[in-house]
Image (cartoon, rainbow, N blue to C red; front, side, top):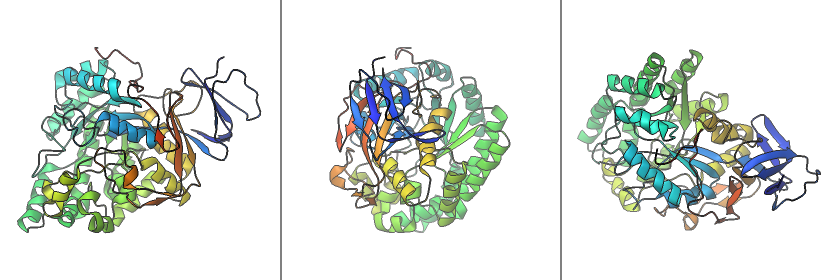
Length: 464
């Protein structure tokens, strides 16, 4: 056997726990694990990971690349620069593009852009709004679909026309179509009717500010989230469709998912970078529109942390959502006109490793949330998310004792800013490899556009 790479001296984290072993890579796959004193001949490259941890790369199923159509904010190349630097080895893009990804034709265009520009492996979640396009897009290799139960107030982005669905009958119909493909249905939960009423209250009082916006979306203990999630869970039960809930953030929602799982509903859910690391009232007061996404009151944040620890919440996804400074700055006085969302893909894994050092999560649980669970639940079992033989050799080498500070000078996003400016972290990613090939090492992205490949159970031609 010709060994492409040997990663030696590190502690490798597997789904069953950590082992002290050397990782062997051949043909872009994990070829085996051997003791550190085992001789292996014909090794092309050796990476010394002594004193470090070797972790599977993040499988991030919720990423906004902004390409095509909104590339003044970000594009596939700049997104995957950040992914490589942040230990993310597979991304699933989102459909809120211009034009939105709703059909075979638009999906083929997006696939072509990924193939040309992506440094890391990829897939894409098209919007499930055109019934006759669901099965043909599944045949092209997608692993999930996405829908937003929301309409923007005071702006037309980031939830453009063609990506939303609100009627319960329409949702049930689409769930039944997606069920027959065997794919998962990602849903941004939102009760638009309740939000129209709540937003109206705040705007009538002239509270068009970051504080007003944050309070509105958390109003009545998060009623817009809880009612929408209750509907989604009941429709998932009725249809048998596997569903995935984005943006978990309230106590009642965590409890509802816990009950649904106990009752056999195939539901998964995620937490995004902003909830554990950017969702306090202090963040809203200090950063205003730059912290929104959402404010999460203490009760909700505590419930989410508990859900992360006990397994109710399945995975981390970045919800990387970059916007320009101009699109954010208007929010200081007209928050409902600002584009919401925050960039996060470059720093999520290091932030989570820092949380391990603070005792908030175990490292094994972070690995499950970052890699193993999203791969298992999104059609990549046996291929991504674990460093066991036969899996793609997607891995990071991290130093759990390497203090550093996040600086905007190091931001790789086209937006040019980070909400984590000045944040001090205790752990750092030193290397990222995708299918055995180095794409990031010691502060420099070394991967090339076009290295990324379609990540699907059975890879099919883009022209399908």
